[in-house]
Structures are given as C-alpha cells and as structure tokens.
Length: 455
Image (cartoon, rainbow, N blue to C red):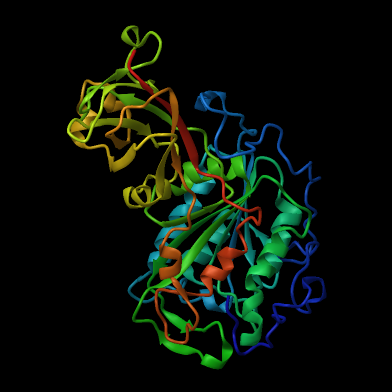
C-alpha cells in the first residue's frame, strides 16, 4: 500500500502504537462517502459454536462427523483505491485496453455479488478509511479506473478495523490490495511482523482466526511507487507484471467455505494460516500397484467394498521380497496448495513404530484411474508405501501432511523494490505476522493405519 508523493505521508513508523497514528483511520471510522457514520451491527461473540478446534478430527472420524461452524452468512469486500493501485486500474484507453487485474477482479466481484454461498454481500473502497459502496460503483471503479486516489492506507490499521468491526461468526472480510507496507524509514522494517500480529489481536485473541492469501500478477500501466520513498517513483511503468493479493480474513470455518466457493476456480499462488479442514477419505488399496505378500487385516474385509481399509497384514517381507501398497487419498476438500503434487512430495510424511516402512511415491489420479471400475477411481491422489521387514506385532502407521509455507512466498519477496519486478516488498515478513506463535504447527491432516503380522 504505497503513497502518492503529492500528499503528506501519513504512515507512522511501524514501531509506534497504532492508537496514536495521525492521519490513519481508527476502528470507529467506518463511514459512507457523504460522511455519515456507518454503525456496525451488534457484534455477537467472536467464537462460532462448533467451530473446528483443530486441523484433524479424532482418529477414525469421518468428514461428516467433523464439527462445523454455522453456514457462511456475510461477505465484506474491501478494495484499496490508493495511488499505488492506479496502475492496476488505469482509466480506460481509446482502444478499450484493460489489465489482467481489471479482468480478474471485475469477474471476482461479480461472482461474489451473485453467489448463493453467502446471504449478505457488502462492498467498500479503502481510501483514507473504508467507505461503503455499491457493487455497481465498485465494479465501475475497477473497470474505468480510480477517479480520486487515496492519500495513503496502512495495513495494520486496515486489519485492526476489520477485526474490530467485522469479525463475527459466519463472516469473512476480503481485502484486495497490493499489500505494500511502506515505512518512513528502513529502521521500521524489522517491526512489520510485530505490527501485523498486533493488529490481528487488537480487539482480543480469536482462537479460530484464519487468513487465506491468494497471490496474482498483472500488467501495470501507471506510476510505480516503491515501498521505500528514497527509491523514487517510476513513471510510465511497467515492463514487467506486478503482484496483487486477495486476503480472506475470518473464523476458520467461514474462510474455508468462502475459499472453496469463490477462490478455487482460478489458478493462484496460495498460503493459508489457521484454516482447518475435515479429515480426507482414505483407504489402502489391495489391487492397485500392490506388491508382495500381504492382505487386508480389517475385520470383515472380505465382505466390504474396498474403499475404507486401514489395516495391513503382512505375511512375509524381506529385501528380496519387499511389500508395497498404495493408500488412496481424496483431497478434493482441500485447497490447491495442499493438492499440489510437488507440495505433497515434500511435506507428506510417513511415521511408524518399529518398522522400516517408507513413503516411496506420491502421485495424482490420472484419466485411467478415474475411469477404473476399481476403488482407485474414488481418489484424487495416491501414496505408495514400501517395507522390507515383517512387523513383529500390531503397530501404528500414520500419513501426516505437514503445514509448511509454500516456496513461492520467498520467491515473491524482495528487500528492495526500487526496480519494478513481480515481487512484493517484505512479503515474507508480512506473512510472518499471520503465523500463530504457539510452537509447532498442527498438521493439515493425519491418517492413521495399522501394520501387523499375518495370522
């Protein structure tokens, strides 16, 4: 969120208390364009009854048994219209040219306005403070350009306002911005993480808080303002695409529902913080790429459809006669980040007790598996496990997907954005502020199985 040099710079040093900021809006400053104060509705308790408390339900639970918060009630969309955003939304040229941002965001706003996934949709422009707007007006701004760009915006103050006035069960706040954090001097940069974390906790700790970040790039036609003012602005920019982002902020269940309904339709870079997901459906598959001497050990296995098996009984295993089996995973309920095969290969782990079982491969469903008459047709991904040592007794085996920050965040981060590039100033530090400081991250899911010797 950069500034126009024609105006006085309103951002404070990042280390200062937000409550003392001159020129920044406060949590009670939500106004309409004509100056009338928009009084928020009575805010109910922030924790939704039945909100998902952890990423993974108890072992053996099914998605249907996973607790869930109430249905998505309301969506509040905030579009930044400061000077640094003009290049994404240039005034329509003689030839009717538009940017990728204009095409994408106009379509996204239309989908939000028309969706039946939420009962209430409200739109705002973020200038010096958020102003309530109509869908038609905000869509017109995206298509035709910003008529009166804002003096400045401040990311912590925006997040503070969203958390204080709009954080409630079944509601998400959607923020569209370039997310440029523009401190007055380089000495404030180390405090970016702290200021973001403080802003999210300003109105009290929210145990179910979640944020999804979606990153895009667009051609940019206008004046480019680096985060550090000393770098100087660039006119007639740019020869490269510039990043912009959609942040979805709210209770975990509401964020998950909004993501699935509105943001999984188009390719984007993704990073998710605090979002929880039901346990995926999974099963060991005995007739799909299996090898060696083993069989289903589940009670009544021969009388059931082979799609929910979790016990592997090994008759014999050695280096000369290894055992291999495949676990089918239905990851269709997860966002694209966690369905990406490269991410899975790096972060899906197998943990066992008193066994040499190893995860040999992870791969996605193919046209052939989808068309199969076997149980493999029900799964989106597969994990192949191999072992060369027969278990001496019944032992647990767990497939666990670790929650790790995707590599694109580091690739899109720069410490100096003086030269326009498809990178964002201090992006990693910005997202550091979204991480919960509660020790080791919870896994996205854990899928328990049992390894045992044959009877």
